[in-house]
Length: 291
Length: 318
Image (cartoon, each protein chain N blue to C red):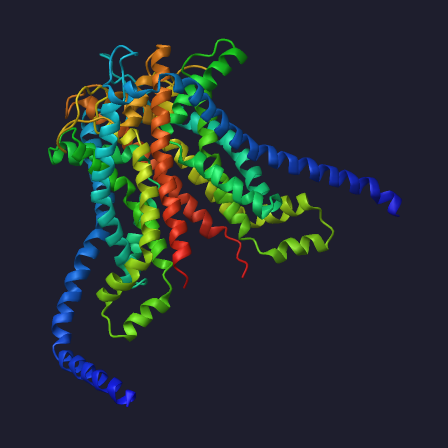
């Protein structure tokens, strides 16, 4: 009897091995693609990456072109977006998590709405920004209009991540504060927010790194692709790193493609440092706080 | 003696506490309300965002349809709003969007599912801990970088493999878009598989199933609703993806099934018009909102379907 099933069994196990290899291959393709992408960009972009590149404005001549205006524009955008999105997002999360009753119709509507907003394509936010901020409020193609658009784009992510951080604070902490006679706002300000702060920071930094990499909504609101001056106020026109990279990629000349690769290196360095900061904050909080 | 010393301040504190208690309800009540109101307002911003999106799209799209009959918009087979002979057939842009998204799914669906099976069933916890962050990096790379990769790395390879491939083509964009959404498919599918209870797998082994049989015949069917929802969300993401297709697939509206020629997706058209200097209120300006509305409706529909699938086909194991 064993003699009759053994070949079938070994065939099944051989097939199982092949299947496992196929799975491993599938996941390797993703990682291999990442490796090729990074190596290709480094090889192409390192050559033109120098101090002049960081401190020059864009130019029709590739050897004079630099990324200064885009880098400064991205930093402006990052800070203004944070200024609008963080207080609003954290406040909204506090309301949903600490104040409203879960069964309340309003909080349920807001919750479903946030989940749906997170699935809206980013370019649609660009159309919203174009219609409301650029045209209706008359902000023009300014950094302010861009940051408000970006703030709305990252708001659902800020809210979702902040809520997770708030939920990680154990109820016993709140109950202890209430037992000492604190009011709800005192519990929120004095206990919940300080305890959740590292988690909130981690989540919001990750949300902001999304804003740094976004291109489409800013093109839609009319951010310029060629800027040879630095913005001095939030009402000035601007460009950002991804748009500058897009501009260089779309040109036919090879020299500009190298500049695009250099720009991507800068962009990835900015993103990686933000992510590293988020990870460090998270680890620190984990080591410090033990419930 | 030390007990007495301790008791005095405690008693004082207690009395002070009591006397202020009398004023507490009114002042505290008002203060609590005053603090809650701005928080509620912040939460309402998300509702306002949705209302704003719908209002802006609806208004400009309505204006668009006063100039262009909706019948022409839905049935015309040409899209030439920027030429003097204007045609407004959304089918041209919609088909390009669907073709590139479908291509992306052909790449991401099998790879993502196999990768998820590997992570959920085969990988040791240590290996999972190293692989997952790498995939997360893949998901965090800005789309303009993927566009660069598609145009300057994948397309030249395609051109040597398949002579006659145009510089801008749908295939290259599809492949790279597939790589972009792969981590999304794999991580959401893996979550669904990880939620399948251990007892089901053990039941399979007890009946003599091999590991791959447990994975494909027990775990995947049990996690099916989650996997389908992951696919639908990934499709919706591909449909809304902009920079990869704008850079690599081109900006020439062609009604074709050929993946080797330039095409223009809905998102790429919005980018194309936005890059130019379109006068506010002109018909060209309104076309991007009409296209945006179509895009919004398609992705909204997919998101609703995915939520419905999750609810309807969820296999409940306590």
